[in-house]
Image 1 (tube, one colour):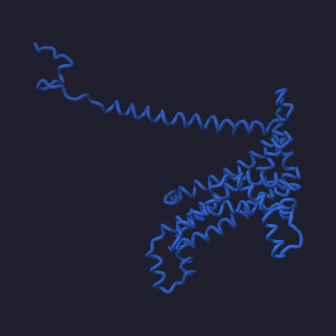
Image 2 (cartoon, rainbow, N blue to C red; image 1 turned 45 degrees about the horizontal axis):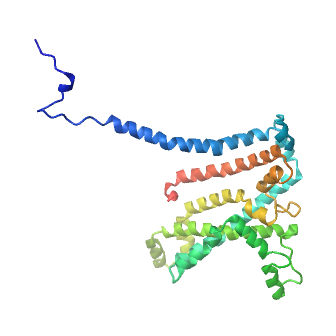
Image 3 (cartoon, rainbow, N blue to C red; image 1 turned 180 degrees about the vertical axis):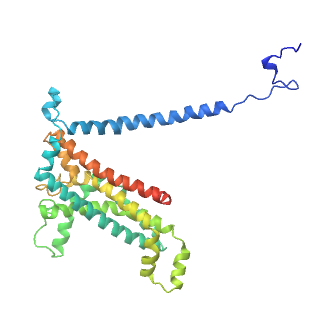
Amino acid sequence: MVPEVPKNSAAVVGGRRPPPDRSVAPAARNRRLGIGFIVPVVVFVAVFYLYPLARNVVLSFQDYDINSLYSGNAPFIGLGNYRRLLSTPAFATAVVNTVVFVAGSLFFQFTIGLGLAEFFHRSFPLSPLLRSLLLIPWLLPLVVSGTLFRWLLDTSNGVVNQILLTLHLVQDPVPWLNTPHTAMAAVLICNIWIGVPFNMVILHSGMQAIPAELYEAASLDGAGRWQQFRYVTLPQIGPVVGIVVTLGLIYTLKVFDVIWVMTKGGPANATHTITTYAYQLSFGGLSEFGLGAAAGDLLIVVAAVFALLYLRALRADPGARA
């Protein structure tokens, strides 16, 4: 007869108990830890992104105005807000202004930023200090930048008009922010001033990653500065250029602070973009919350398209994330 071996005594060898198998416990701990990290992110995204987005979409299909806040009565009207919005002349003006504002900002921000990045690509004394000073417009709050340019471009006491008058370049003060012909140029100049440092920093970082051997080889082949820039620098920073333009476009589409502080969309809707127009519809005194939500949804769709293009560019070139 074989004696029964106690379960706990089977693993005892030479009077010493082997260490317990901990292979399962760490895996469970890691799983719980992963869930602990994910849950706050999911809750944050759901509360602060998904719910407001879903609520805005629902609002855009309702006739929701100031009376709805008190009565709670907001009838469903389908695409009524979108049809009404697309037939409004002010919205058409806002769309045109948005295209002009975005295209003008991107062109000048990128062109000036690329020129400064190429300028700082070559080492010279005080280069880091000058680059740091050029970052100041990017570091300032947008409200501060808008207020600063409103003072600079003031018709009566603005520094810009005083300089133009002193140099006899104009006979009378220019009402930069008070006429439709110059208001858009004024807000454009301010937004370009803010965005140039971002373009310069990203493009300069891309140029720093170009191997010096390429420039040496190009120089040995007789390439001058312009040819090196054309045939070495630009092809090497191609992916970075795509990301800079895409991010700049997404940022410029949602610019609100600068325009609202400087002109509030005026005069005569001359500087209204879709962003400021949607805000004015909902909170600027009109209290057309459903109509404002519809305008916001259209802007979200446009921004989402370019955000997807940006993510696609990142997947196509993982090295551009660095």
